[in-house]
Image (tube, rainbow, N blue to C red; front, side):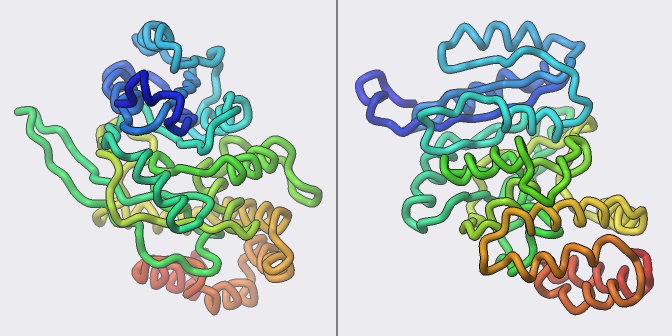
Length: 320
């Protein structure tokens, strides 16, 4: 915990947390955020029409001058709530911005470790692996490492995020670019549908397409709570593999990829823009030519070998 004597010297990080019916978890998570070592924290919270005790809990938390609760609203999805935060939260004076789910527990050195990585590696953003946990009735936990730290590929940002958004730390300049893009999409890019594409995927794509550097850390930085009400949980096991395949076949995922690709092309630096402008239309149709072009790009589109194989199978069979 930062002490009063060194508080003014410690870097300030703005943490954006979205909540919805999270009374069972929010207080523990807020403590883990406010208890970060060697940093100052400004926690900004947006609640999405909670009907449990969350609003009252947030009112109590806001007695701490480090906590700001935005006016309540009704957003419908976690990504829409996070995009509200990313557009509206006060991040002035912060050296970096982090995203936080309501139900995790951060390791007490999460922010200090990630700030050190930003500086040492000279990158614009970092994310990390997590330790997923399931609480048993006897109070014990089952845990599993969720590994998202496979080597990045040139175009992975068109099809996936950089791991769970709850692990993200983005430096102030890169966050400003993200905020600009989601507030007022660049010329040639349609306005973002707040419920259509996950906020963390959008953030990753904007940074990578615009020439930013992103590091995915193999060291877990938080305990990733799993429960029945998870909006997006640990992506493991045969059940989740079946869910991903159905998502491929439904057409929804392809539409999301198309939206991300068009936004990426519109914010891209000079080195990447021509190629992204050629790739973006490939997501608009399922004709054989488009599918085979994406098939050839598969090694660049996913980080994990199994996901590349699944993508190629779906493209060959015409499911995607």
